[in-house]
Length: 82
Image (cartoon, rainbow, N blue to C red; front, side):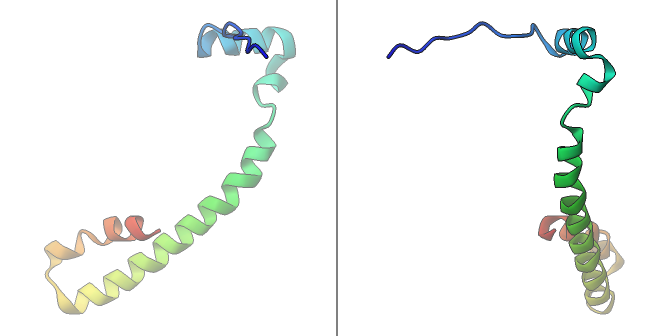
């Protein structure tokens, strides 16, 4: 079989938004957004829960065992583990 290559549907993001607005209105721009929220809300909730827990534990650990300069890295450490 031969594979056919179609030309791009849009010339860029602005052209895509304009074309969608003309044919589907504002609802077309947000089409599929509900599925994105169903995926992202729990994921970000879990991320921030882990981030906060690791940050709190690192702060408690380093409060007793290090200088204030080392404590400034606690949020970075937490984001690496989250």
